[in-house]
Image (cartoon, rainbow, N blue to C red; front, side, top):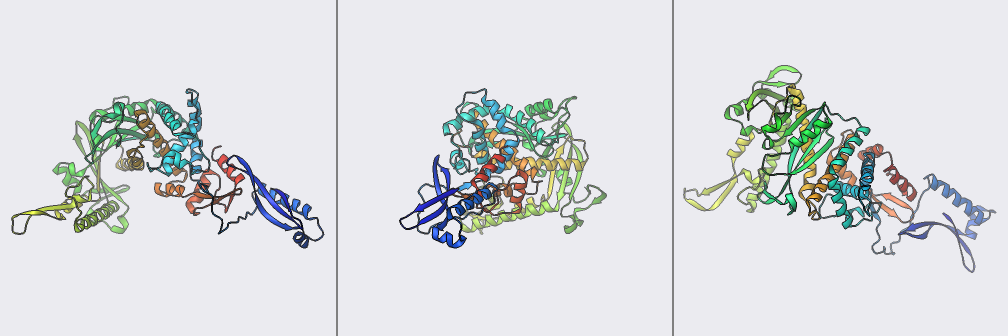
Length: 570
């Protein structure tokens, strides 16, 4: 800041002005009107107004250097805002950027760039792809458009994004390997047990190469099918993934994943977690040197009659840490609400001797019943409105509860279909509420199996958080290699989120963390700085503690914002 003296015929007026750069050009603004010569002399006495003003401005500059200056801004109710001027910026990406650089992803990109002739910054493009996937996952808003909301502006083009995706696809395995090694330097990986699971993703695009084959999907339409195999450590932190085309239902990527894990983690116990539809005996027989272990979900409804009766029998249940035998009919709702009861027996299925472990939870039963009641209420509303279509499209469709009656009251065939909620269907489903079964060849005690089963739920949660990303693939992904890059970006996004979740000690849910980051906006005052336009909460305080910088001051000067950006990278 410096002194500016405006002279007229009869007086001189002193101002504090500040120079800054805007859109690459130097400009200045009035920070404060100190007053005319006469006004200042009336306030300060015999001192020279110019010398006093210079001393006052030096004090302001010193406070600004120490980030202690109070800032005032003037706005006019008559002055129209400038056309196309942007004053609102997103800052949530800065917290993700801190983890991105901590994991060394920028260095991985720098190393990759040495092998390619590029006219763009690969790390800049990859980081923006990751931040945009996490903060604005809608496919309707592109990376270029959304990244313009960030405080740091990006200058790459869509053509450069496409070429970067091709490079990322070819370097997919290398990036995963380097990322895993970098993560081990940040925190201790718990790899005594490694969990693997896979899921199918149905892309709405007609793809080239081997991705062009089409399969029937659950909803009854058709679309290219890809399968992603994800493996995580015992702390639910992602370790790597593979992607392959699904040729037929039940085929999986398990064998290739297991080989990759065995080469790098020879001392680890490899536990494959699958749904029954992906279970294949050849994937789990293993060998003497490297036995393969599995835990697969088992639908009680598909068991034989004797096993179904055993699974739903209220007698003969156990509880971890207790030697008692429990009867489910005698449980106490208040004291047993959080407890998980279990029973087990040996079975042989698909030529493999295994254990069938069944669990029961009052809490789970209540959650399932509440969800079903909500679906029944919606089905009744559709019936009452007359907009109900006859047949359900999915297994979890509300219409599965609807009974279709084709006969009139006198027994004659009716021309109209009478719809009602089928009580018989409800009764059949309710008998399994609260029960859950798995099959496994692990020899661990049941509480350990249940803990691993809980780890499987974490993997399912990861797939659930990423499925919208895969399902709504961008229309830019017209090549198989770019589809791979899309999966890679989503995997890196998931890894960054899990690291952040672990840093927050798992106190907050996915929705809470991402929702907060999405709302971290700042209002820019030209030449002065950024005013936080978000609500300070306990979660924002924890986020600041994790990353090591603060953005929750009443106003953040331009100089301080530069320091924050620097702190988010180094």
